[in-house]
Image (cartoon, rainbow, N blue to C red):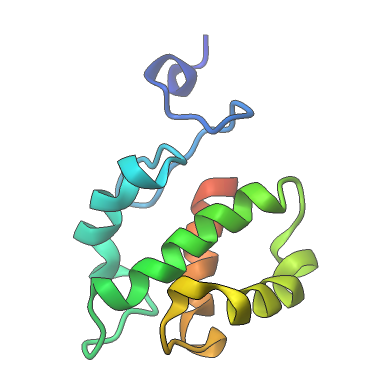
Length: 113
């Protein structure tokens, strides 16, 4: 058996999920603490934004990876832009300010790095 599967480090289709600094499960409630501990190390993170600023983007990325399962980022990015504008949890954040954080979560969930 694949070691990732044995450890439970797979998404719902058996794909290993990992980040450069650890493993995500694909379940936002279980992974939230990893993002909270590591968001500041991500290349798009800025000193004037805290985890609370990025959290909606991460949650959106998780949900979108499931909603658009099997599609590439390039295929769905225009849809995600529109979806973000309707996403109630986004606060005042624009797509341009948060798309890199959304993509980060998307890439981690889909295994596309």
